[in-house]
Image (cartoon, rainbow, N blue to C red; front, side):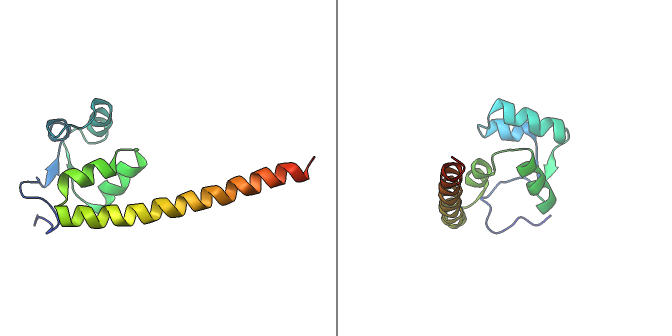
Length: 104
């Protein structure tokens, strides 16, 4: 498999729990990874989405595998999404507070 241009050199085509631990992954996350992919996982869209479903740290993984330029773009996009999440959380909180007041 051809390595994506945004990966740092030396990133393997198949990620294993041992590779994750060698790159300072948390033991508990590596155990979840090993249970799902005992023989390792190819870096595919489907596996990345599955890792998200398993609550594996995609931010940590991105920082480990992406080039500095790709990591900066990733952080920029995640920061914008986080800001949007915070705004939606504020709206929901305000609605919950005022809905509770209206029922009194």
